Length: 439
Image (cartoon, rainbow, N blue to C red; front, side, top):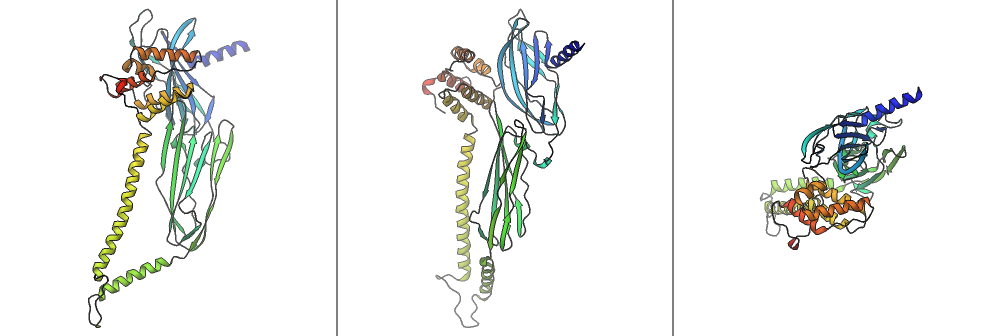
């Protein structure tokens, strides 16, 4: 009786994973039984055919209610089912629940192009997957929801605009805290909570967030800034800030403490002097040109007070304009550099250089990252080769796949991949490796 019960349970379990539809079959796999809020669940969507695929599979935009979903890559594979070889495609996703309750990875419908058994012409066929529930564990005791973050590792950097420990009343100092967090998305990094400080006004600035993704990993960054206006003299102590996170691998809490910062605020005589100068200029404006007391009118370098004030204002404007121009030039080149580091040209350069590293995984990751940046209808090497490569590139890729299976070193014919890239960027133009412009 017990044996029959286990057989029944196993049958129910595998029926949730495998979904056979004619000569097509779909599977949904999770890499763990449950996750915490913010912890990624790796979801593998597998589609197999007893013939072959004549066109790549587009994963589309998959939405999971109550979770962020990140698509990584597709991988071609094959397996034996009932003694028959099935060709397959595995699509990898990471699902990050952002609510304290279970979420459902929905049933999906894909249109694939594959021949029927006994035929060789690919036709559009529909294959579906079954929905599966992702169990979300409650946050462990001792954590506030506002501080909860799940990651394998966190790097924190604290930067003050004033590092001398001394300032004057009226000064404005800026604090910047930058976090780089692995295995998460920026939306799940909690903002810094700034404590109030006596004698100081605070003005939080806009935060900067960024996500970084390869074909196998994801990480994110968040930078929070605040400006403090020092209003009173004396010793000001800005409190420490503690960054906490939960490591799902070790199942432990970790934290990093950003130390407190003490600032000695001195009186600012310039504040009073500034008002004195303004008052003095006002008095001079009233008395200028008056000869009632028999004195000569105000003159400096043959300029009266109006001309002198105009020159001073002009010099101030010129000074700040030069600072702004310099800042704009720096911002322009910084933006150009940032754009290049996100460009297809840059990622193709990384792909080319990775072929010399001797690392199979590094080369494949660089190749798939470049293909993803190109933004083809289907982000696979097979699609790129079929539509933009030739027979030689197809043979080169076949040799590479054979080397992967045999665990041999990869041998990318870079000139052929450059020709394919040229066709992607300039469709219809005749390719020539002889006049190729290196990225």
